[in-house]
Structures are given as structure tokens and as C-alpha cells.
Image 1 (cartoon, one colour):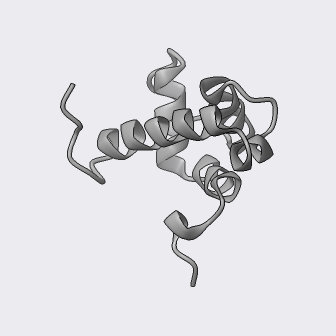
Image 2 (tube, rainbow, N blue to C red; image 1 turned 60 degrees about the vertical axis):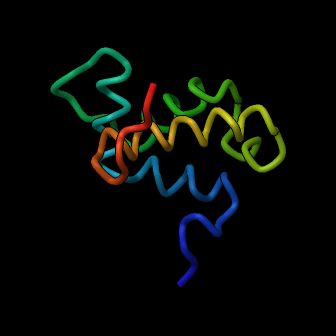
Length: 87
């Protein structure tokens, strides 16, 4: 089984957008606490957060990759998967 971190960023993003915890996180970050996005709304949130038109761009756009990595870190800290980064 391939680990998430070994996948292309676009694949990681696709899996992330189907994660119920990420769907809740995306809704909260979009100003809709108490709700949970569907996968397509989560994908839209991710595209806007990374300033891309398609998740495929994550495989080739270095700036989008940096934004995606930061978003994943923020989400992982929010979800309790990692310690919160120091600000």
C-alpha cells in the first residue's frame, strides 16, 4: 500500500477532499462552523486556498505545492495528527 506522503500532490489532495475531517475543517475555514462540506466543496476550498484551477496543477506548480503543504500542516495540527506548529 502506498503511503499518502509517497503519492503525487494531486493524489494526496483527492484523498484529502474525501476525508470527513478535512471536509469539516474546510467548512470551518470558509466561515461555516457547524457544517461539513461534501467532497466537491472541499475540492473547491482547496483549489482556492492553493490558488489553482485544478488539483492536477499541484503536481507541477511549485507555489501551489508550497501552499498545499502549508494547508496540510494546518489541517493536520487542527485534526490533532501533529503538534501545532509554533507561530
